[in-house]
Image (cartoon, rainbow, N blue to C red):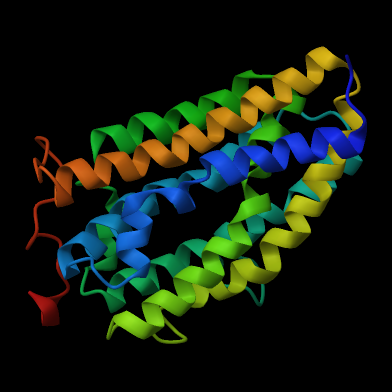
Length: 248
């Protein structure tokens, strides 16, 4: 049976309450100030791979959109990450965070040392958006529903617990507090309007669950490689490499 828009929205929001990666122990460790400097650096390196692929994912999505209104509404997401006149973009802000934690931003941007699981998960998300229906692609982006809370908690936790944290190094997260609500308001309404059968609602729900799995698996990989059992796979970042000159 097709759910009402209100009931369907509540169903989507429950996914975040049960499965969003703010529940992962790595985030509790990070926000609580318990991560070592190298654990923070590993997170920055691997999260960069995700950040750098977001505009590629959005470009793949737009290449399949025939409706110019939808393309026009979506293209700001690429500019939010890649930058535009007057906006340096999220990718550059993330590299500023990399510098703040002692990493060479060129090393981080090279994506050398990214964990294999991170690559598999993120690349799977790009393929998902490229190959699935537009409804499933938009629905997968709705993890943004839950992002403002995690960004706010991250800003507070990092400022309280880490010497590198300041307005400059955390500018990525502060900017997303204003960018994400705009994106999610459009995406949520689009999904609610277009998931107009029970089958489509199920597809959208599965897409959002898939995206939460993509995010969760990245933190699982970080935990296993750098926290416990701290078994770093071949080719992944080794502490002490890729450091900025002053931090080397």
